[in-house]
Figure 1: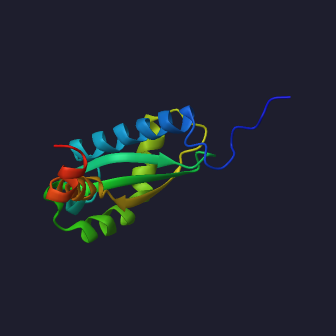
Figure 2: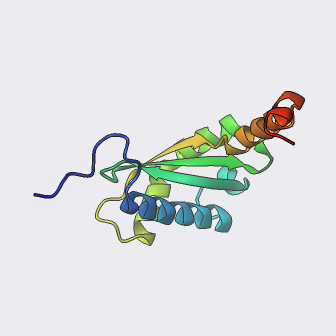
Figure 3: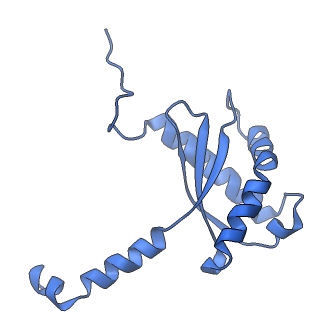
Length: 131
């Protein structure tokens, strides 16, 4: 009998990664083209860093950041207000059995990279790693 690969801690499956990347590309294209009916959201330049999907592919969490990092909370509110339209547009672009429910979170990758650089540039750390 085959083992179930959906146990905790195994990380995302290849299918989750593939669907997440398809959704990320579709969202990026929608934002770049300004295809939405909301003029407030069309005025913004939004970066979609990553999309993570649940194991059953019913929920997709998009990690987004407005250009320059300004107005982050307002951007999340605008995206939440338009998530139905975004979901419909993604459903048209992708041939999935179910279009996942969209959730949006701020992408803090750049902040974490800055913190890591700051830590690695400290004298005590540089001495410990042998620079």
